[in-house]
Length: 385
Image (cartoon, rainbow, N blue to C red; front, side, top):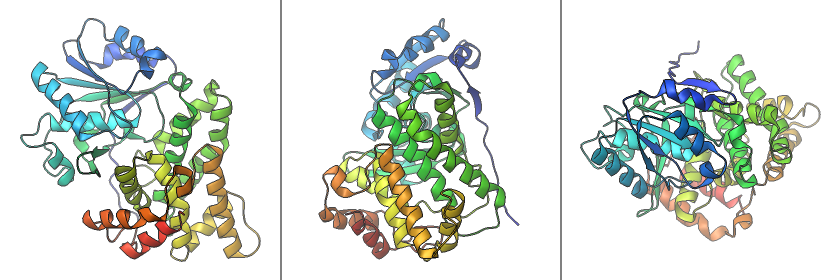
């Protein structure tokens, strides 16, 4: 018997021209802070479309949220919220902007240093400002979940928090807004979504046939559509399938009631915090190494993955497992994301620093069963060379 509580109040508006509905979604008398990253939303017309839909409201702006949103930047946004009496937030961008907006939503109503939200894993969050999202980069699924990952540059720490109070009220997903994304961001998004699925699927058998088949279908969709998204950037059907897959990868549905891993993510967070790698780059590094290191513990699911996702059903079991992992690596490289330290100018000398950071942050028993000790993490990192 599976036990789970699937709670997701986010309203999704999917399709071309859905931004126009902001006029009905954002309260007419709201004092709105629009948060975004760099200049891409201006270049592709998203900024103008958002502002047209919000016409007549009191609008403030906060730009410059980084690909790995930083505490230092976001506390500046919190200061704007307090100074201008903001009562509604609108995130326009990818997962990093939405993650940052969640932090701002919670931190603006907290009578303490906002970083304590991360330190206490949101146990001190009792209220948050309402907000919505306009997604321009499918990757993290942040548009339909209650999680956020924030980096503190001063201390090179990257932590996550979750709170039901920071679900977006709504999320607008218009695939046409992704046509002009750089190839690097598209590839990163594909890998990010793929590993999100794997962290909830590649564990141990739980007799959860619906979640397994759902996860396998999402993985197959990424394998089929990922390279096409790079080759055919203005193919609406491809971008729509990619966008919806990334959302479903981490909205809580495929992980409901099943064991979850997340050790690849925790190790990846330390690599990003210490060396500035893109989040997806760290995942492409760590996941294949993690699967090889833990192939015995994950044997049953690896064989299932090999058969159902990659069509590897015949021959020696160990050979099938290795072939499935190798195809995973090939797929990551096919969408432009490297799978070895050398691809990012790093070497084996990074291993001690990452292991030390894991220990300092209490990441000493990771994985679905707590078996990813510091020694296992060290072995995984050494396999990345």
